[in-house]
Amino acid sequence: MKKLALVAALSLAATSAFAGGMAEPTMEPAPVATETAASSSAGGIVVPLLLLLVVAAAASN
Figure 1 (cartoon, rainbow, N blue to C red):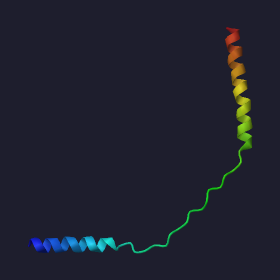
Figure 2 (tube, one colour):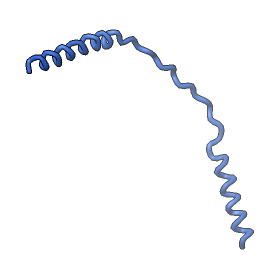
Figure 3 (cartoon, rainbow, N blue to C red):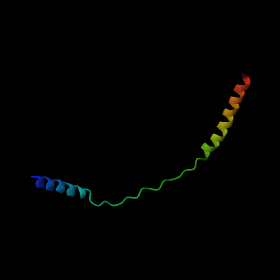
Figure 4 (cartoon, rainbow, N blue to C red):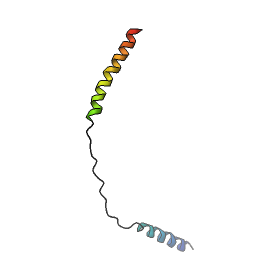
């Protein structure tokens, strides 16, 4: 009975090893970099304006 259980377990393990078969490798497309010049220049304007606002608020108190 133990040998039958061992044979059944080995046969199940052997069939699952070949379930998928060979698949063709797929190449993923290369990522495309985009230029974001507008966001960097907008960030350069926002920081000094916020700093000016904080200085004005501190001066008014």
